[in-house]
Length: 395
Image (tube, rainbow, N blue to C red; front, side, top):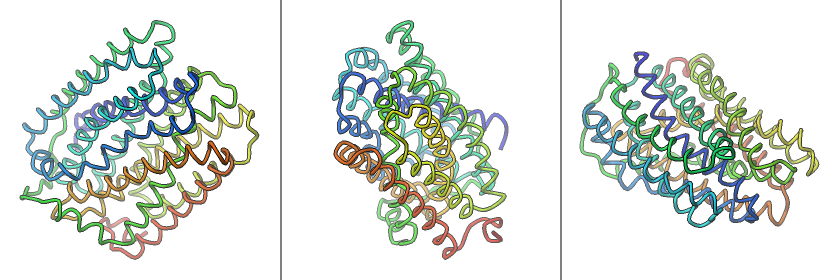
């Protein structure tokens, strides 16, 4: 894979990460500051709902992800549409309009997940296991870089210059970044594209160990959406919360994400997943123990959780891609990530209700247990299933 290919992965992923971080970091902080309840903030995780339905059109992306000309044109069009849909954010954020913002988050997420499917199809059909792990590292790093802009810099700069000029500039940059799709050069193992149906991809759900791991991974993510609100309730301003989580924390996630791809190849997926889950579970357990107004402790732990989430992203992508069916890689990957997204959406709503009525301590303690269980599940299941990499086989 060439350097220009890595640049293409970074640019494409940055578009996806920018809108995602804006709606999950900046918007919850703004809404909480405007008086929104934790239940309403939990609903912002609706960005996962369109992803839960992407299996419906995944077979179509199975066909267009490989031909370079078709893929490049589709990426440019989707990026332009995403940029146009992002424009209304300016007015809605100024008004702290909860339900319109939730709706807009769903639309932007729909376009972003189409871009993700194109990337996944290209990576699974044209890259070998080693290059795919590295590409996933760069993809996670690109999403983080986009997240730094969307979750931290955009609200911070908007506090100085207003939302309209900042959102307009951001939208133009997103459209331009979409042109980098032509840098995704095909790898040496391009596979033939056959007619694939949803039912072929759905056979992946018969793999019980993978499904158990998926349920635990997705459910354990529910508390993450409430971290910005936790900082606000500890006495921090929305702008400072967005800057810390959207810039500092995500800035640290970039080297972690890039390194994760190398660590997977060096130590194996199962070991990396277990260690990361143990560390993230420990951080969440500590969050459950700190006093409500312990601003410094909450800040350090929230940043730590975000950094570990970057590694978790690379590990999860690699797991789903590695377990995808070879005869229907995009469709089976879409089925796994669709179920994952549906569970994440429900988990976020439940997390908001649990935090509202039982408190943050109960929520974070329960999530810590789920995170550790997810790591143990992946470690066990990948020992029972044949791995696709020589490194894993010897791990």
